[in-house]
Amino acid sequence: MKFELITLPYATDALEPVISKETVEFHHGKHLRAYVDNLNKLIQGTPFEDADLETIVRDSDGAIFNNAGQTLNHNLYFLSLSPDGGGRPTGALAKAIDDKWGSFENFKEEFTKAGTSLFGSGWAWLAKDPNGQLVITQEPNGSNPVAHGMTPILGFDVWEHAYYLDYQNRRPDHLNALWNIIDWEEVGKRY
Ligand code: MN
Image (cartoon, rainbow, N blue to C red; front, side, top):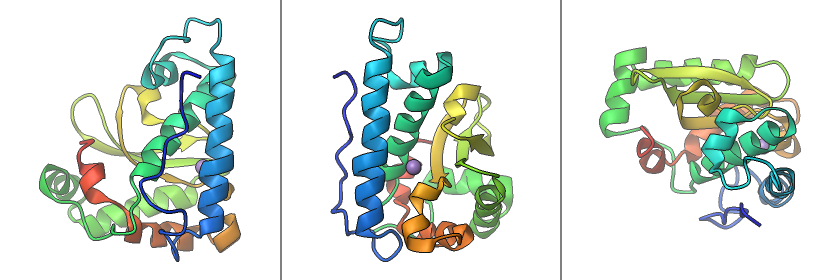
């Protein structure tokens, strides 16, 4: 198999109480695994067989795009989380956020709003555009900023499978809690 399910750098119960062990086990072990398995099957015998994940997301459509996008989305998402996370960004990313939104608090508010107001399933992303400018995007379903020529930095998953076991319909509560487990050191490397 070309693509492998990523190994989480923390125990499945390590993100509690923000994300339960049960949610991590379903989300990583079932949902992400299915995207990776589907992608591996779908690319067989296509021009994407030897392509890297970002290239597939950029250049494909249909089922290959959906499964490649969700594989990339979840790889970045799970590696952005840490039981030792929280706090705020530092260095160049912190400065770029302040320059664009005035303060980290304003940025968090705008980002959470993007996730809360996205209708149906999808993602809120902080991304860097080709001019190096930070932007917040709303990506439907399995899309990723890579599909628009941008660099993904931080993504919040607003599919119900990401929070329904723990928060039911309270998506804003889940998104607000996520800030407590963001690994800004890891996220900052993507800027
Ligand atoms: Mn998900």
